[in-house]
Length: 496
Image 1 (tube, one colour):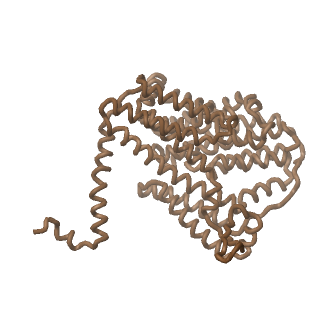
Image 2 (cartoon, one colour):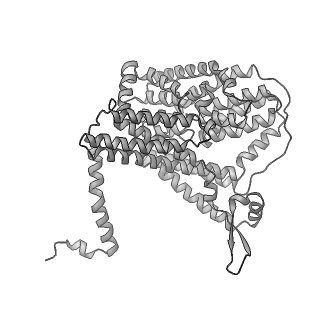
Image 3 (tube, one colour):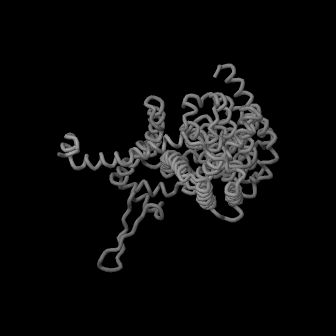
């Protein structure tokens, strides 16, 4: 007699294979999840494995900070450091007779990174597609051609950076408006330096009141600590964070005519459609997360699929676009095929969405991988629990959050925020709002404290420098403190 149930016999061969796979994989995954929640991590902070792992992280991050000096991509040292740290984690737990916990913790860290990676990949693809369709170039051209005074350009670039950052991410907005500052005031170094400081502060401040504006805000949103609507409580403090130093900076702006040649640029075909798809995709991500409880990455990847379909349409139904791309983007959008008869080359033009994705910052995505795994490894060794008890236990949540925000001016805000999340502190909504504001804007204090500052130092090399930014750190610190006080006052008034 068969031991298989009658329903199994009636199944198609494909369903039988699927059932076997689910039966084989589901119990281990479920068991791992239960085990991870039930297993207490061992404190290895004073052991040789723990101290060596901490040293590896310090060396890796030294090369990240010195990226410009060694010309070594920041992703490389942290990726190697992540591998070494997790090997040390495995050895540490194996020495204690536990060969299970380290593997489960590593899989958990990789799963967290995978969700954020897909979300960022989708968002970055949309932004780079808009850039490729000349959306940002046309906006820059329009600003330059208006013949605004230097003081008006100062306020326009700062304000537009603040408004674009929540949508197009703070780094892209800073680079766009930084190019406007350079084009308009290239003959006035003082204006360029002050304009770049203004753009950096506005970019970081604008990125905090939207999950799409900064990776740290996205991390808090995807972790479920804040709803999408909660971020709008950060709008008044974020505005204060930018306006206070901007008002002080504007007192030193020379008032004069623009100094740029006028050359009008237009968007390419499909630019408005791509922009509309991005807005619709963001709305879909928010809706599926808020109404259905599904991860926001589902909406982003679905929108990316629609964008790919539209890219297919562009490559097959626009002969003028093909000719234009053939002339202007030969390196990015041409592939050459050699026929079988000899040396004849047939040039084939194709508009492939992944050719656009290749221009995205893969180094940033791989750096994010290294950071998540490095910090996750140190957390598994017990370091984050130690820091958490010292900070939040001794200082209290509000003071600890403000101090953590100041630390982001020296250390990239991504590992700072991931460390806060990995500490697994039970914080109120008000405190999560405060730490999101602090970590997102604390990097403005120093030019090296944010990706926007580092990028603009390269764009305006020799004019906007670490020293020129440092001269105005006091004004930025004043805006930081006032915005934090305003945020605390708002949450107390609203009873959050």
